Amino acid sequence: MGGARAPVLYFEDLTVGQGAETTRTVGAADIDAFAAVSGDTNPMHLDAAYAAATPFGERIAHGMLAAAFISAVLGVKLPGPGAVYLSQSLRFRRPVRIGDAVTARATVAGLDAAKARVTLATVCSVNGRPVVDGEAVVMVPHRPA
Image (cartoon, rainbow, N blue to C red):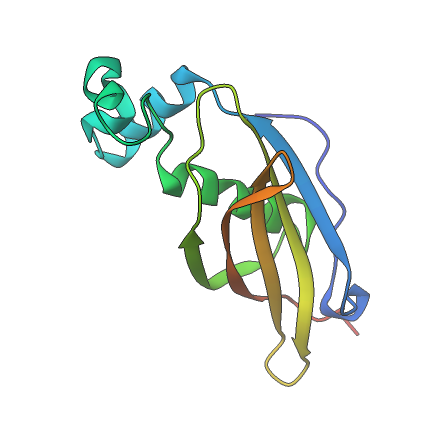
């Protein structure tokens, strides 16, 4: 888990409209690993024969797996290291299928300097269509004096 660490962004470095994103392709192994870690072994995610009989017709990723990509943006890119996740609303709009490239994007929507809180619009999309959207609130440290 080495590698270069992202630069620290302080509250004062952030502006409304600033955004960042990351893209990850979901594989069957990702879904299997998420099921193992989370304990959510719903056969819709793990059993191809079961999933074939659902409205989706095939295995789909856990909604929370796609939502986890939002956490990656917030913790690594914007605001990045030092940010503390306080809340996240989520709306699951479409399924994520094996092989889908999911782009998670966070955009600064509001800044509360008194509380050092940042509100971000969050969305995960596949082929430009939202699969998960919502709003995050994070606490970001002020620049040291």
